[in-house]
Amino acid sequence: MGKVKYKDRVIQLIRNSPVITIDSIRKIAGRKYTYLLLNILVKKGELHRLGRGCYSLIEDPAMAVFCFQPAYLGLQNALSIHNLWEQETNPLILTTKTVREGTREILGNNVFLRRIPVHLYFGVEYVQYGGAFVPVSSPEKTLLDMLYFRQPMEREVLAALRKKSDRTRLREYISRYGPEFSKLCRKLKIIGHYTERHK
Image (cartoon, rainbow, N blue to C red; front, side, top):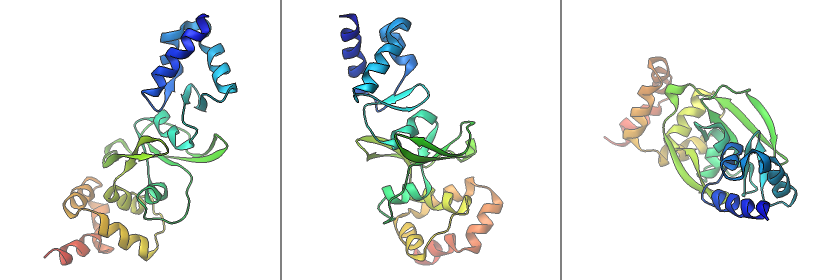
């Protein structure tokens, strides 16, 4: 009877958040029932394991972004979410946490993790995706992250990003990357494009 009561309370808690941790469940069910309850819910498919101590009701590997906070979905994944990239992409998480970079398998899918310096954690907005509001880099931040991580971009994608970006915000963001990056943007006419277009 106790397990049923705890189960209902855990489900209610996670309905209010896309992701739940073992610590949160332990506060409800106590140390005695936590792991037993998790095993039951996962086996029944009512809860999905995203990583160590991290679970979700939503069966979508993109929810793993909440397991590595501060973090956001970025680069090609953000392009796809903003409808600027026609190809399907696996979740690509940029985090300030000290993690092992590379590919991880989550819910049977490849999820890519990359670290980003703390001072470059900005330009994040919440977008409805995969059944929840998830942190995603804004169009301006996506453009600059693509350059910062030296990711190839087709001309059409670059043009679409420029069109969707706000000039004032883009200038502010560029300055936060530092002088060398600003030089690169001038060389690539990222800034010049807006100077000419908005005279």
